[in-house]
Image (cartoon, rainbow, N blue to C red):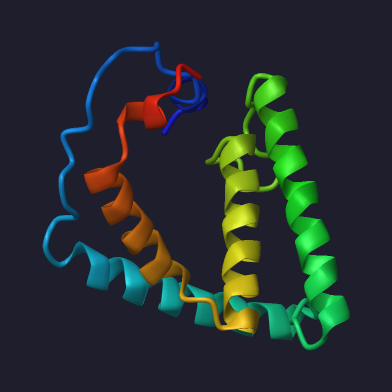
Length: 140
């Protein structure tokens, strides 16, 4: 994906009175997402152990949560500055790199706390698809 395409895809959609056409999660999707998050979480936890970022105490968890907020700020800054190429992985935009950092931290926290994020995401998507109005009825 090019930087321009990435930057353009980050633009907010125009407000419209649309109604979601998604009424259910496609068959087989939930299992793939759940397995994917579990596998990714295990890989990231192993990387974190090898690099000294493992969550082994409440203090470590607090530090990773604070790090998560730092990465969200870096994502905002990347987008504010026009989303240039990543300084560390030039094939990707700076925003993509920061999103990867955020995803890695979320997976690490998921592993440490036993959270079932893949299953929770699919349950939330299903709930939103069947019970929520477009943009929850809000204009933002």
